[in-house]
Amino acid sequence: MRPESTVVVTGLGAVTALGGSAGSTWRGLRAGRTAIAPFSRFDAAPFRTHLAGEADVPAGESDLRAERLTLADRFALAATREALEQSGLDLHAARATLGVFFGSSTGGMWETEVFFERALASEMRRLRADLLAQQQYNAPGDAVARRFGAEGPVETVSAACASGSMALGMALHALRRGDCDVAIAGAADSLCRITYGGFNALRSVDPEPCAPFRARRQGLSIGEGAGVVVLERREAALSRGALPLAELCGAAWSCDAHHMTAPAPDGSGAARALRSALADAGVGAEALDFVNAHGTGTPLNDAAEARAIREVLGDRVLLVPVVSTKSMVGHLLGAAGAVEAVVTILCLAEREVHPMPSAGAIDAEIGLELVIGTPRALPHARFAASLNLAFGGANAALVLARADARG
Image (cartoon, rainbow, N blue to C red; front, side, top):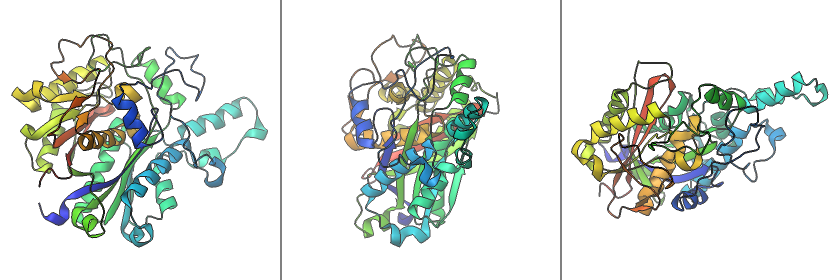
């Protein structure tokens, strides 16, 4: 790999139910505090479950009318602003070659629901067509490009729960090719009735906070928010005096070609994506120091993912800690992979893995070394993987490393 093709992270941003920044999210995760709770975005009474990971509207991004911004757009803008401030990037100098790579699965669906709710209630005076203007799922990425003046490639991926990881992978590949010099990569989604009701109709939502890899698990918990990273080629970042926070080493994706919603039971598609990401990173499975799993808490998904991880790690499987960030903030759907990449970078930087809540017995069939109750110190951790599995059998894997992992 040529030095100029080494891609590093110079800024992080996040909005989750644990807080409006990467720092507040990390503090909540480290404390083992779940943010999955009763919520107020809409009335959950008609549904069979009543919990979610609801995020606060970011300060400074509360003016929906000014730019016809959706809630997902505002999550994206807040996380991007945080990441750019940390990166120290000169936007004026960078804008001509600044790319935006974003993921989303619902876009402005919540605002569309508000519009039709008012229409059905015959509240014609309260109808606002601007609620429909940003309904499409490319809205968050486009809003980021407009706000921060990106004149390079602007791309959106919508591959259900793999969208965020794929967006980061697309940015990595674009930087390696020279399509842009700097990339804002991430994803954003907000709570809405159609996804909340849909997952409830499938009976794949847990009435209690989700319990990934536990014997009692009954399904996922839905969350909302955004995760964003600023990516640059290492030499360019160092030449402007930036401090690399981590390296995005590899990315890959695959398809199970199995079922509309269920994963391939043997986990073969997920294993293939993880192996391909390791190959893209130029490291073997023996280099992995921990895994941030997709870990939704659904019976079939957790079982298939555990098989994939066991297959890739082989004899080292009980030496490699595994965690699910979703156990604390919920499943952010299209934004899950982006937020989990941010969290994985923070784990590497802090040299420890955040825990999952301690309640509930581990499923004896899982066969993974789960981090539960208290943070797990990893003073020598260098490489980590973040894995996401989606409806339609879409699988995405990222390999990340400490900034100094390769010397």
